[in-house]
Image (cartoon, rainbow, N blue to C red; front, side, top):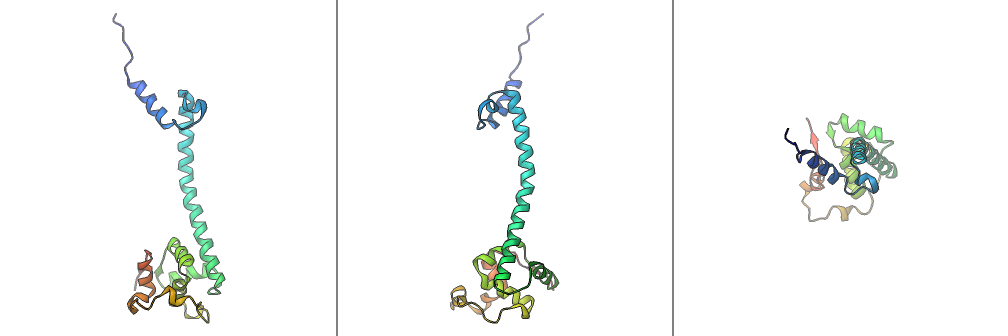
Length: 158
């Protein structure tokens, strides 16, 4: 009977697994069984943490928005702000609202003024001329245009 030698398929599979675990330490990058176990563990962690990352960023955005509106004395709470946004059919995602709250608070005040005129504080901060230079035409000083400038998501249904 003729001798049958093993082909390269198993070696190619192990090499591919080793390349995945090449940055692991110790036996986790050298022994095939351990590499396989660590690969499964790493992929499970990556899958779990993708959802966790989305959750953590959403919590961070909500905290930033809430802090900005409470600091300015604009609104009572985050939940009332979101409720008013949806009632006015002015749909802004939380990521963009958080960016506006940090980088350009005057734009946030303008958005809140569009939602509820009573929610605007008595006087805007003195930095308003810096945030909206005189060179901008009036059409660009609306909240919609400012959101477009800041790369925001703006959607309004009538």
